[in-house]
Length: 101
Image 1: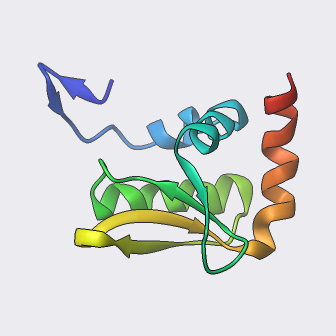
Image 2: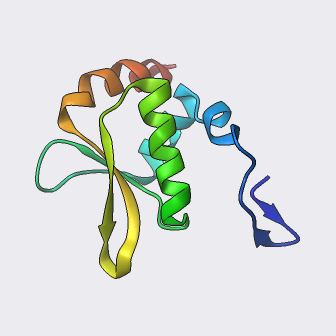
């Protein structure tokens, strides 16, 4: 869906919203999530996405799950998503049932 003839393409509008289910979010966190070293928030790696695509993902997290999150740029300007500590209880309520099942 994200690659055509081996080339990454911009997904159509609404794709991220529909694909970022609680199970998908739990999988993403387990595979490519990290605790923020400065606090108790969560970093979601989006290194293969552009800044614009990462912002679209942030919008999905904010609208669908009401998480307080922001964009961070790490080494070489690569974007990651930071979910702030105040959203961690909500995040846990979404993903823990998926991890336990």
